[in-house]
Image (cartoon, rainbow, N blue to C red; front, side):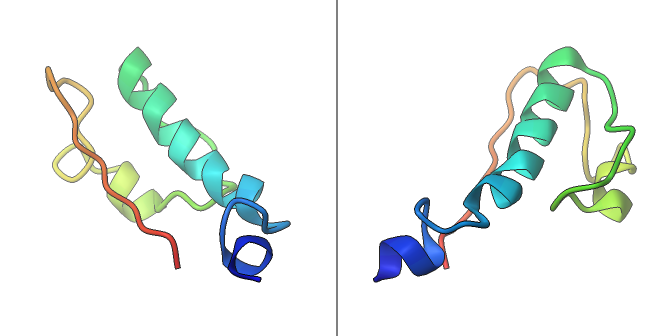
Length: 65
């Protein structure tokens, strides 16, 4: 039940993962996110202090509900 309700088997899992992929691509290309139409946080991701694009290494964390 957990798999289909809250994890990768959930119908909304792809939509939630889209924001993670957008942030990863943004950091790898060093280009800011332009369209905030997913789970990304425009307040945090638009600020170079909270979402830097010029670091040699990044550590992102997430959790599964």
